[in-house]
Image 1 (cartoon, rainbow, N blue to C red):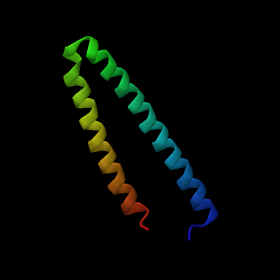
Image 2 (cartoon, helix red, strand yellow; image 1 turned 135 degrees about the vertical axis):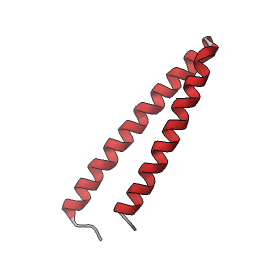
Image 3 (spheres, one colour; image 1 turned 90 degrees about the vertical axis):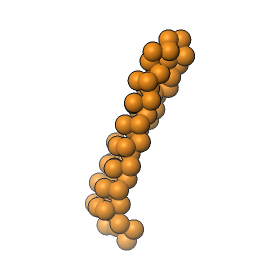
Image 4 (tube, rainbow, N blue to C red; image 1 turned 120 degrees about the vertical axis):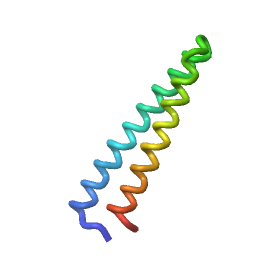
Length: 69
């Protein structure tokens, strides 16, 4: 069971990560919409999506290592 101080710190980190993920998804959707109008931006969207998957996977494993269940 987590202590209250640890819970507050963990909650803040989760909120920051959630806001970053939400911001990235909004930017990704904007790029996708823009790429529909101009096709050269489609590879850029693919690169952003791939980098998001890589960063999210790394963050997930770091989080599991630092905060095991």
